[in-house]
Length: 328
Image (cartoon, rainbow, N blue to C red; front, side, top):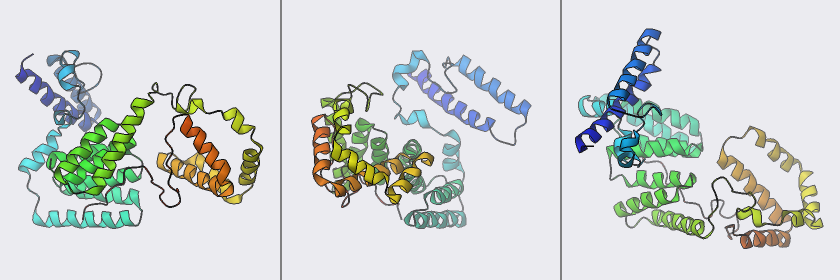
């Protein structure tokens, strides 16, 4: 396949993505949407794109296009058109900047969904400002939607490939998704642009450590916590027969604060919130019986599970990459 044809397929995929998004617009009637679907099918057939979905790469070109980080796989033609030919007036840019500042204020107030909506309004006015995308990525991260956070970081980097904070925030999103090799690459790019930024260096060190631990303790996909995985080597039967542990658990279950905390678990769909609940339970166990808690930690480490050694009450995000604040 010629390089020209490969480039054409990237372009056609981008156009198909645009058409696919247009199908859901309310201003199109059923006949118009059907016409768009036919157009998409015709383009896929002519350019020999796979039937796995609009814009999906063909088997023939999979080698060239398998890299998800290739920016050609994420081109937004309409955004490119707007950023190239549509001029945003100074008044509109000022309005978008004010919305961004409102979003930053909402982030400080921990109103993350409201901040996300506000950043989105700023982007709808000026879709060429990389700071808006990077800040919205921070809101997505705080809401636990790391895939969308990564997508926004990539959008920011398309507008400014030398935006170090976007590289750093992309590394954080990859880390949260356990894509540690991609996180390492992102942090390395951030450090290349800001060689003296200690946060990026610390986060890179964490990602490299997690990569090393994974190589030492490989586990089959989906086996976390299952027999044969890191948690599968812990003798849970012995732990349940430990009278001290059982008594401590019984006391904790009678604590109204613990009951309220556990009662909230059913409605949680945010992994960070679940992890925070687990951390608080661990702190309670540690304060109830430090020696017993230390024995449990030791057994987990012997089973190959990495457990932070610092006091969790002093550093709740220990051994986790630290996010930068929103851009001003």
